[in-house]
Amino acid sequence: MNATPELGIAEWIAPIAVAMVFIAACSLIREPARRNFSAIVLAGAGAAYLNGGLGLWEFAFCSLITFLAYRGLADYRYIGIGWVLHTVWDVLHHFYGNPIVPFVPTSSAGCAICDLVLAGWYFLGAPSVYSVFVNKEDPTG
Image (cartoon, rainbow, N blue to C red):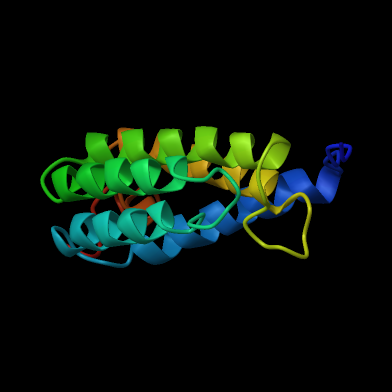
């Protein structure tokens, strides 16, 4: 059995930075396109682990995430739930399956960190981060 690789400080900071860049970029998209785009990204993430080492469970997970993405077209909470479940899937792959990036052993653990940050933002309703800096108004409308 292979030892599970441990995360260093860079493996904690980089996924948080990736999530922040994604949130900042998505904040530029006007509603409801932001929510629709987010649902599409979630659906794609659901297929990221197909052939990831967990057999038929990969297809069941992909189907569940696709359903949540569809529901996410109308409600950010479903997108948040999808990212939480993807976090769980990342952790399972870190310990028992194949990493999401084959040549980076800690990539699934990093993905889990990133996904949890995204889930939190979606549970907040995916507000534009720019509204904090511009008189509390969303510059994207």
